[in-house]
Length: 156
Image (cartoon, one colour):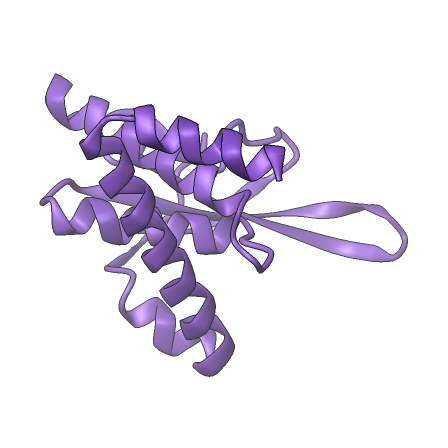
């Protein structure tokens, strides 16, 4: 019971803006999880934006926004990461990137969602996948990206 009490106290002392971001992140993580369970990925991908060519370095393809956009993108990344650790399902990198992208889109902030693959580190995992998101020239979710991942797709 002490853990719950501590978390509620932390939430109570948190600013209203951050609390609202946490609630919104929870809703978008659940929506992303549901969409990925119910629909084929190609249908979900149509909602992610325009597919563009991958970038050689796989980073910061979203361009540079203003300082205010960068701070908001970081706050959204914080909220999504925080909630991903507390939802009753495993919120993997793809769900986190989709949730943050939707939150940024609502605010008119452009972002780039990157998909990468790497050779698995064990025979049981022949191939590994990773998704990461950047916006306003700043990392949002899925960072740091391990150097072994090669970007294969990007959505803007």
